[in-house]
Image (cartoon, rainbow, N blue to C red; front, side, top):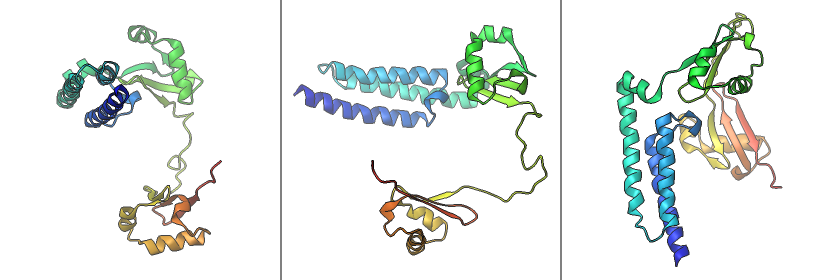
Length: 228
């Protein structure tokens, strides 16, 4: 009986926490502000309590979860409107490298050591401090790096080379599932898609892992790989 109660509570709490996180926003964990991270941890802890103690009513966790989710939404709305409140809650982005020079005093105030700085620079593709014009530590803890103009990869604009508009590739098939709304958006139909797939030697939509149409009208089709 206890196993059924735990299973039931696990499913209910999963959907409750999922709904709460969706209401709070779509940020990835690495993008969470400090107050969002704290609320996320608290919600996770509250969700575990009814599964550890089946004698406690499940509402003992549902109410606090709803309150915390509502609190996060209120704080986010206030932060959108009032810059001073946003700064108080989330802080400000801070320049830690300026013109290739590491701002030692700033690192000390942030309690941000050189090993962390060098690791994030390497993750961004920079191993030489002299190649960095600016590096900004964002409020989420991520490091934004801006290279010197002389080491920045050349772009078509730098070389005065005209380029066509690229836009976004529109997915038409994802893992064997046809996106009919995207077909309609492109002014196409199932017959056209089936014929295009047939030209690639495929007769069954279920054999298509991905199919996407670029703004230039080029259809990319990738077949499913055989199971290992």
